[in-house]
Amino acid sequence: MFATLNRILDHLESVAMVVFMSIATVLTALQVIYRYGFNSSLFWVEEVVIYSIICMSFVGASMGVRNGVHISVDVLNAFVPPAVNRWLHIIAAVLGIVFACFLAYYGFQLFFNTLGRGQRTAALRLPMAWFYLPIAISGLLLLVRYLWVIHHAWTKPPVSLAEELAAEKDKLV
Image (cartoon, rainbow, N blue to C red; front, side, top):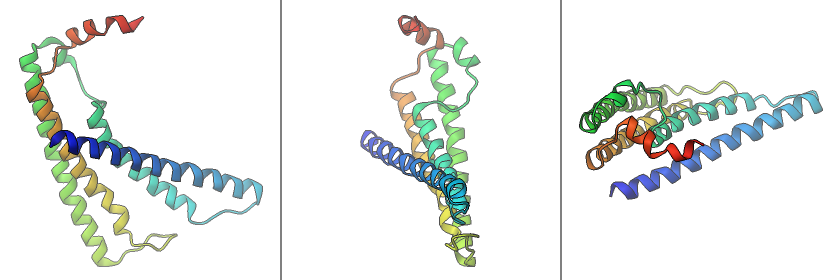
């Protein structure tokens, strides 16, 4: 079940990232053409690009957990045996779950409060709540990803950094 959910989330995150990045890139190029080619501009482009980049950031957080590329301090991992290393990964994932729960809870609270107030975006006049929804969705994605990290650390214990480097020494040259 975890593997299927993981594959589905991988695909959805990748598609979302491509869509948001394409929107930001195409609209930025279009705005440059309008500004320097026609001496005019589209009033709504900057807002859409900003929201697109924000959405990329929240989707990227989940992708970072998936790929294990978030900033971390690996000093302890380098010196402790694999059994302790497993628990370090699990503790870090539990802290990540706490963060993800706060993010999801307060993200949904922000979404529903803003939806109830009827706040609109400045340029597009769209409901602002829909642009806050990625915060809550990111919390849910992070929650699933951190649960996957715990599952992975429990079923396949992490190796020490020295063993990992020794296994990849042929790739260094």
